[in-house]
Image 1 (cartoon, one colour):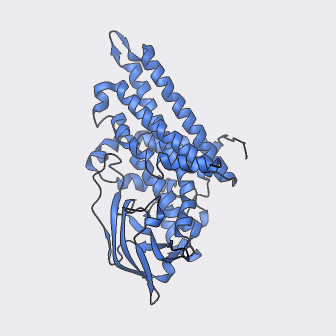
Image 2 (cartoon, rainbow, N blue to C red; image 1 turned 180 degrees about the vertical axis):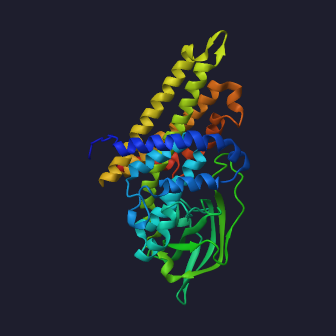
Image 3 (cartoon, rainbow, N blue to C red; image 1 turned 90 degrees about the horizontal axis):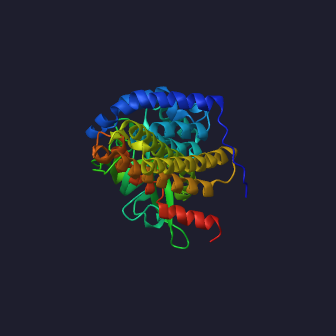
Length: 386
């Protein structure tokens, strides 16, 4: 087992962090409450993120990307998620779930067609895996795709699909049963379905507890016809290819969680130093100071775990264990810090206009999305040989 831990930050990465932090503080944060209340994706902010090159950070320049690393991508996600998790997950899912499968498994023609617009933030894409009875249990997939006269005919439903119904969504990758294996298990294949294809319906968005700005929909497919060439990767490897992307996605998702935990810490520190009760700042009370100290410890642990996994990914080393550790540690840190920050703010923390209130609502999904805490424990224990 490799035990190296390289967390050195390059000059470019430090410059990137400062640029994204300034953008987050001056553009994203002031608009967060408004868009959260409207429950709509701020397309002007997404467009600016595209112009900044954020959607293209981990993609080769030949496909319109920036040619940077996954570490750079994680830095951008962390800084955005400090102030607005919905914006952070729009970037994380747009790259990790929308565009990355095309880069990893697509043909050259598919890459040339889709990646430039996705890497430049001019379009979004989603990945349709989850169903009512399927997700972690891929065997429960009910959506089918039958090859008829050179076309895939898709029927079924998907749920909880991020970036699937926005005004700039151009593509959804769908996993579907395309046959049965010798042992009776379903053969799952990934197929590219362009937005607007006849029979493909994006249902109304969910009324969610949090992530109000993030675009999330159930999807319906009724006799949806797409060319045979729209298969993504090899037939029967749809779920396997997705799992490979999911490991990378968990690293980026951990950066989102770390950013959320950091945002709660910063808000709690600011308030504890400025809020006076009985003639002194509440931060002078040891109970508050100790609570904030624990918040700092959680952020530190989450960041170390996240960037350890990210550096292993970039170095080409095995990182499945580190990705699950990072996802579990950072998501719990975000939820715990959101709870503690809300408590420190008292009644003010219960107002939706307060950033910690949004983090409190948003952070619960961090322990569920891209693999629940229980799934991470399962992966970790298996990697340990159990």
